[in-house]
Structures are given as C-alpha cells and as structure tokens.
Image (cartoon, rainbow, N blue to C red; front, side, top):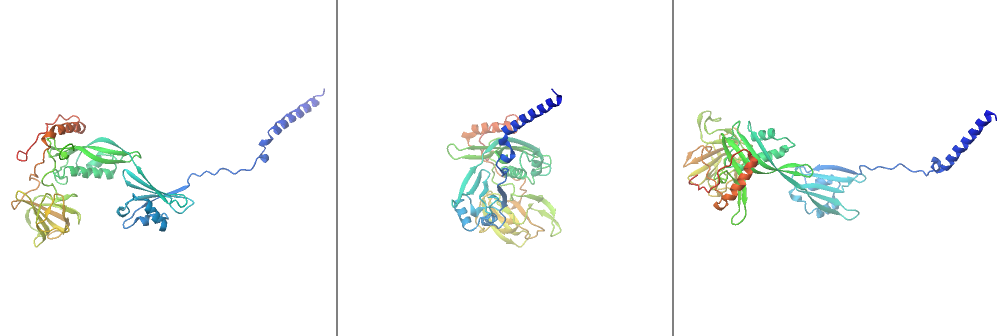
Length: 430
C-alpha cells in the first residue's frame, strides 16, 4: 500500500477525532454563550467625614454641613434624647456618614464621654431617626512611675512616660492630679528642687479600641528636700461617716487648715524676703510671695475664714482682699483685677473658694498675685508656717488603713521596709 495513502488516511482520522471533540463541547463556544456584564464591586458605598463643633457654633451649624436641616433637624433632636444639646463643648467631634448617592447624612456619631458613644441613624422612608447608646469597656491596669524632677513636674513625666504608655494630654492630667493630692503639703512651683524624686502608683484605663487614659492615683511618694512625703488613698464607707481621701504613712489626712498656694495654676516669680521693688526702684521688705499667672486666673482662699477687707487700696496693693482665720491668722491677696461676684466684708468663705482674679492693679508691672500670710499682724513666711495638722483615721479603722497602706506600699516601693503602724494622733501632739 503506498505510503502517501497511509498518511492521508491518518490525517482524515485525526480530523474526525478533533471535530468530534469540538462538537461535544459546542456549549462552551463563545458565540453560543449568553452575553453577561462584568460584576460591579462596591467597596466604598458610604462617604464619611468628621465635623468639629467650633466656638460660638451650635449643633444646628454642624449638622447643616451634613445636610440635616429644617424638619429633618427637628426630627433628629426628637430622637437624640441623650445628646445634651445646650451643653455641648467646643471641639466636640461629630462623625457624619452618607450614601455616596445621597447628599444627606444618614448616620451621626458622637463620643459623649470616654465610656459612652451616641449614634443616631436615619430610618428607611419616613421612619425618622433612631438613637442607640454604646457602652465602651475600659480595662484597668495598675502602673508605677518614678522620675527625678529637674525643671518641672510636667517635664519629668514627659521624660518618664512615652505616648504609648500615656498620651501627652493624659500626662498633664496626671501631673495636676499629683499636685491636687499634695495641695496642702507641697507647692510644686516653689518647694521642689532639681533632683527631687517622685514615685506614683496609678490606675491606667485602656479601651477595647486601644485608647489609653489616666484613671486615678492610688499612692505616691514625693521627696521634698530629701524628706519623703507619702500619700495613700483610703476609703471606708461601712458604718458611720464615710472616710475617704489621702493619708500619710501614719494615717493622718493630707488635708490641712491651709492650702500651700492660693492659685491652682501657679508659678512663683519672687521668694519671700527683701527684693528690689520694680516700680518704686528701692529695696524694701517684700512681705509675701508673688505668684505669676495669666490675667483673670481665679484666686482661691487658702483656708476657711471671714472676709475682713475687700476693695481698692490707695497703697501698692491695688484691689486687695483680707481674710481672717482662726488663731490670729490673716491672709492677704493683692493686685487683683476683680473680686468674686457678691463678695463683701463679713462674708464667710470656704477653703478653695474663688474670691478674686489675678490682675495688675496697684504697684505692679504685670499680672500676678501678691499673697501674704500674717500671724497677729506680722508677715510670716508661708513656706515655713505650719499649715495645720491632718485629721487621723478613726481609731477603729487604724488596722484597716494599715492593711491598705502596706498593700499599696509593696506596689509603690517593692523594696521598702514596712512603715510604722497607724495610730490616732491629736493636733496638740503633732
């Protein structure tokens, strides 16, 4: 049989096989399949934006930027019953969400507090708005921080704590909390010297979203002139009057008859003693302490007392207030810009109550407070005067206080030996 015949035979057979396979798969031929469009992937159906409540703005101004106006705004207010519309603070952030195909916001979210988030969602059709409140859980962790003060308490905390440990605004809150604990014991603007150390045991709160903030102080130690000043938080509400506050290692309350300083935001510009007077241009006894502060800073009474003088003085004090206290003590506040509303001679004032505002009246070169501490009419250095004795824990709670103090001390200073047990101490013996 000729070779050419065999080749043609095989070629025909192969063509028949390929044709059969092609016919068997005819449903997969492109021209036999129905035409279909490529699927549309929607990965951003919503547009989110954050609006901040500005100064002198209202809620209506913020929501108007999201298209919520008129009757829609009225319906929003009716639904958002948990939103304190009249007490919103400037800087509050509102998260607005809308469909990209719509110009009106369909969801408004605002953080009412660290623990609460409010969300108001627009319902379908004429359903109106619906409010929901989300509770944000916070986990509590006890932490210990220790550092040396070289320039200020703020700087020491900034160097000792990273942002990941506690954000800068929360570090400032911690600094003020430390100052508040020692408000009767230590003036951090005058008493602290470079190299003085502090240790604080605190609670840090962390949310499920990774936020971190300062909670409260449990215990602290501040070394002032190499002398440790302890503070332990103790509370007991079982039976009788509740006992709550900070106490020293011997169980004496840190609260005293007099505060260490008349300003909460304070920075001393001159020490007690002789100085060159900047207006009179002569040396004279400077019978008090000057606290530098911004114009209008509130001035507080350092102790309970009765207003003995309030008004303008022709001498160097300018606007001045005298407050009479027990045991022949008076305090004087000079160069004030204004007095607290309604303050008058003979009125009782409480410790910490605002009685005036920092100014620059009288013989003054700039806004500051002149503060005097007079005993039987004689100016006395308030830094060296006993601020009073702290009330001790009740005798029946001395054992409970010792247990709390010792448990906190182990965390505050792990290697410190036990402190003496608490015992009732009278003011006369202290």
